[in-house]
Image 1: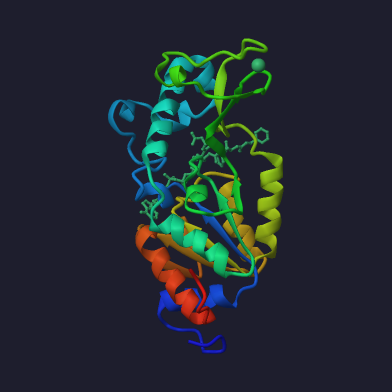
Image 2: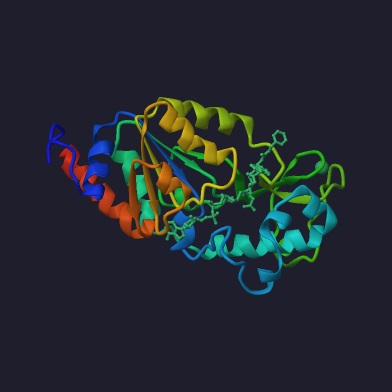
Amino acid sequence: MDETAPMSTDPLTAAAQILCRSTRVVCLTGAGVSAESGVPTFRDAQTGLWAQFDPEELASPAGFQRNPGLVWRWYMSRLAMVEQAQPNPGHRALAQLERILPHFVLITQNVDDLHERAGSQRVIHLHGSITRFRCSQCGAPYQLQPQDREAEMPPVCRLCNGWIRPDVVWFGEPLPPEALVQAWDETGQCQAMLVVGTSGVVYPAAQLPVVAREHGATLIDVNPEKGPMADLADIFLQGPSGVILPQLVEKTIACRGDQHET
Ligand code: BV8
Ligand code: ZN
């Protein structure tokens, strides 16, 4: 399939043609890209003993102030799931896109490190990382200790005695300014945005695909369900990202005629 071929009527082929003809591609991922790794999505009914709690309540400063022990234990259980999880073919396909396309930047809402463990190097974390910890009062970084994982309460900061917290962005907290500026800048300059595994309900991240469209970028949505992102997108690829993305990468390589891809 050469670069000048007319756009295919097959959505997957058309999406590959868009990617291989774009010089700057941005990808926005949500919790869905980690679902096939066994990491529950944010809005999936909470599993087990967490089923009785609202994640938006637990992932908030008020929730932490009200019950630091409960929130700490919730993050320790999620961290354990992330550490036991392996990157899935969807994560690996996105790492491959970074290698074959001239300019590819991955913007993620996820707090896990599966993109990095799959080999992605240019990753912008809008909501922080569950693998990092800091003091909730003075902000000093904190190295998690083995005994912290089973503790009833969060550890306390040795500098100011404040509670230690995960270095994630809670509801009602501002996103890291440098990540926001970089994400907005990349989105404003891309020719194509790949949106993968997000319900598109959390702002300001959910604004990025709208910004991309406003700048004339082509929007491709990958999701098993037809949500708000599918309506906004030019191309909707319905299915799990672990299945769709490897197929998309294979067609993109064919379109670019890259023979040397590893
Ligand atoms: C801020 C870190 C201001 C923590 C997270 C009313 C209207 C508009 C906005 C608001 C409002 N009220 C409040 C707000 C603001 C609020 C917000 O947007 N609320 C929403 C709920 C309405 N936003 C904020 O508070 C943000 N901050 O606005 O600050 C400010 C400014 C200056 C100064 C002070 C304050 C902060 C938002 C960040 C919150 N933190 N995470 C943690 O994780 O513990 S967000 C959390 O939800 C997750 O990180 C996740 O990234 C995010 C979004 O969820 P998704 O990733 O989309 O996941 P979800 O479960 O929703 O969907 C999964 C999708 O995957 C589904 O579509 C499903 O179909 C699909 N899927 C399933 N399986 C697969 C799949 N896809 C592909 N393959 C599969 N196999
Ligand atoms: Zn401190």
